[in-house]
Image 1 (cartoon, rainbow, N blue to C red):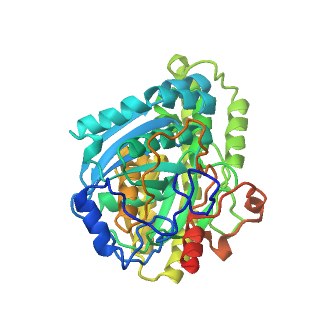
Image 2 (tube, rainbow, N blue to C red):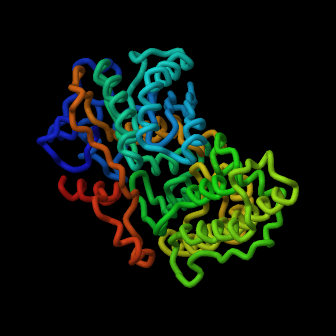
Image 3 (spheres, rainbow, N blue to C red):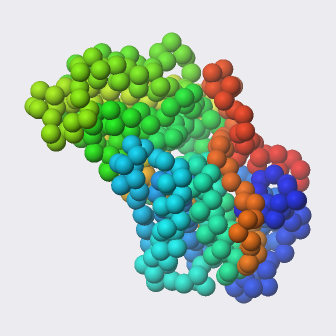
Length: 453
């Protein structure tokens, strides 16, 4: 897989110091690469400069994107005009409901069962074959290792069999950059809030591959808090916890349960939802709600009690987002005064209440809110294909993998992979204790590679 650190002993992450276009690349693409070879080295690692010029013509590029970082198997085909030629997602909703959350081993098996079908369906819906592709992009991290492996193996199989370049994609960067597909006028720099089941990130996107992390979660993400609240309230998890809580909250009194807003005393942009989860659990116990009884079977009185908890939880959970976003925007404007957009993406960004509250925040700060449609907020192949395409246009890709790669080949997977460098004022002592076995950030690796040139 694409490697950002030299590891010549690995067949997957080996780096070529001199890049040569494969003789099997389409003659048109080969000519494009040769024309630009003198100014930009079209090697994903070596040329990962956020300010390098375009190395490949933007004409007729078609990228297949594959996403398996967590619990959805997704593939999509996108072209360089920003057209989504196809999008296919296989949901694991039944598994989520059965296990009350993501079970990594079960999720891996589910990915393995459908990955071939999902990729083929994406190609069929686009009326294309692998021979029509320019490159293959795949999420290599962060995420669950067992799940990432399935997508990476499939991507390498397709790329190797058809001699296609390969682009390794950062999952959270993909959530960020899909906004540039939705709003083609969105230019760097801009702010981004990325909210999902496993991640909370506030970043300043200065350029492609150049990010400053202003804040992150020191424990649980907001999506995890939504999921656990839904489970404890006995809601139907087949649609995932977020939509279930959001729907029930509409029936409740958001101020009936006095939950405390997390980290009020911390004047930074980091998040914490572990304490709020505990508050919700204690409130459920105090009201003696029998969560063994489904919401559909609950009495009117108990349904109202659950709705009040859902509404109160959502109000405080989102208020935590609002407060941190306001501070992050202030920090971002101090660094880059030209910022005029806040991108909100990730699964939780599908929540209408979240969008409405953050719309108020950006208005107060004089910015504009950019939210991808719900289908592009949750994990999807489109965001991976588009991010791969953005980097490919700058020559940031790996040459085709071996056609007959062994099953036990060591893959470059990055389950814990920060996106940007931490802003000095945003560093958390609590979080610093959890950095073991974490890959260096994407941005720091890019900067290191530039210095080596």
